[in-house]
Image (cartoon, rainbow over all chains, first blue to last red; front, side, top):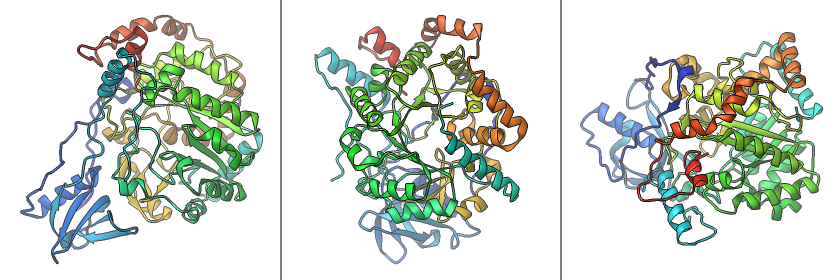
Length: 142
Length: 380
């Protein structure tokens, strides 16, 4: 197994005018079917890319709610691993792909929504209604 | 150029030592992110979208010092999140000053004025205040009315108290070059040491995914902004990097030039892309397949990138790495007016460009003032 290899882009990058962003993939609530090794690898790759917590159930029956911040593919499932912060622990943890039995995208996708267009629409509406000090505020952490 | 001689000397001698020792890959600036949480919720930011338990975490001062010593950089940038929200930020800054590292504390300055008394002016400490253009542009970009005025108050107070202060702007598609030039006048009149700028990067996690500048447009925009330059404008950047932005030079990315360290570890390959983490800096250097990054690699994630964190190290290395590079840098610093009739035409025809771009954002049923309608495209 190896990390994904990037295909050469056919465009001349120096001629690019505007560059499209990435397409949004709605994964919130997804419970991938893990029928084979490829399914597991694919699901963990998406979990690594997901900006929310994932529920990992291990083969020993333990379940953790965690943010997966790293993954490393090795030659087999046993020497491939994910690194994560469990929502109730301070330290980084590591788990082998081979230990994982089930993955659920249970946490809220923090990168979803809050689009620029939505902000502009909200701004224009509030402005038209005579509001002042219009702002988006970070979500409360507690 | 606004960078003090002592800082230039430190960087130049650092590069020379690395070259003489035969080291090919060495960092110049550590992007040390002590935390991700922020007091703004900008629609263009790809850095702060994490679950609450991640946003509550932060690096300890000891972890920060260890990272700095591990990679041995002469300069440290402290972005975030908002570093002034870190309860031990003063301890972190003082520790880095003691280590004689040139620090750029990147802040939105909402907290700056009331926190200034906790810091001591030093040649090693610069407040790099995020200011994305004139008042309305900045407020729209940070999604908060009044943000500009608070930041400017902080800047003025910091300048008054003898701190080194720069402003730091990121420009995206739709940016009005005329407004940017007026903005340069405004910030220089505030007494800042210099201006830092960069084209925006297509953050994969940014809520807005429609307005990332392609390279052709970036070069046109910066040619319009930076040509026919006023003598009063000072830039706290490599003049060769500015020439790169204007399309006068072609550089490849030095992705290891500005490594990033945060609560997850050393970020692969750079501050902007997230392809995993390593536990040590050496592991980052040794295990990252650097050939997979940069425009020459064909990696689509790098296709439009001209961001300072990857290309300014290249420019700095070019400037201090050879005699011809040094003369090119000196020439760019001395003869910096860049008279260019074509660039003036770009400025004069800006409304035409705006009309061409009007398809980028359409909001049904919303009537925006002309100024706001223009701002809808900036998203910086």
